[in-house]
Amino acid sequence: MSPETASVRGGRSRSVRTRERIVAAATAVFARRGLHGARVADIAEEAGIAYGLVYHHFRNKEEILAAIFQERWGRHLEYLEEVAASAAPVRDRLARLVHFWVENYRNDPHLMTVMINEISRSYEFIESHDVGTVMEAFAIVERMLRRAQDLGELRADLDCRLASYLVLGAAEMVLTGYVLGTLSHTAREDYAADERQLVAMLVDGICGT
Image (cartoon, rainbow, N blue to C red; front, side, top):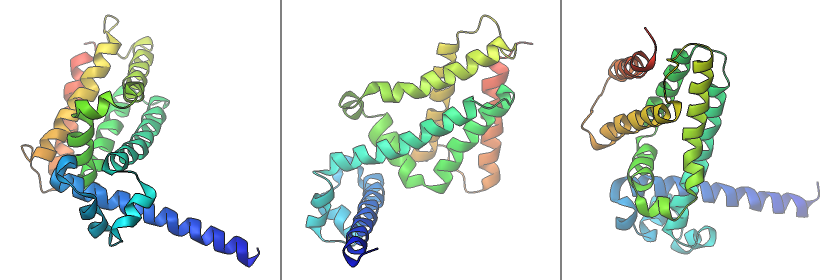
């Protein structure tokens, strides 16, 4: 590798790392202050970089929020697809999804706060982005439920599209409770108990007797 090539690659690597620092800093700032209460200067200070460097990577804080959504939502959809494609019983697959959502909050509450407050509950954000991307999650869960229905795991008269809203809606409301502090836990065992309760309510409410 020539010195020139190494220099270019090194520059790109630094640029990627700086962008990641900005996104991480913005996530923390948005979680504390909200999108509208945050300033680009706050994000730069959190990231430990010059104010102007933020604008080198993003036009404004709204574009940073969009980057948070695109990266996070893309990984979310990938995991949904992985679980939906599994041959495990539907109860096990729903348990995996519920655990994934709860663990995401436990491991990164700032990120989940932003996803709930600034994205999923923001009509302004949803209206300005491709709603089809959001609806992909519902479509994946619906396909998973239809497959389970075909295998006789779910009631034959179940409306799987409606049930997909039930699954994702229930998960969002529980996560909202964590974010707002109305479902406040400190012990991992309490979160695990929530997972068991949520899966039981979802599955036992839609499975045949």
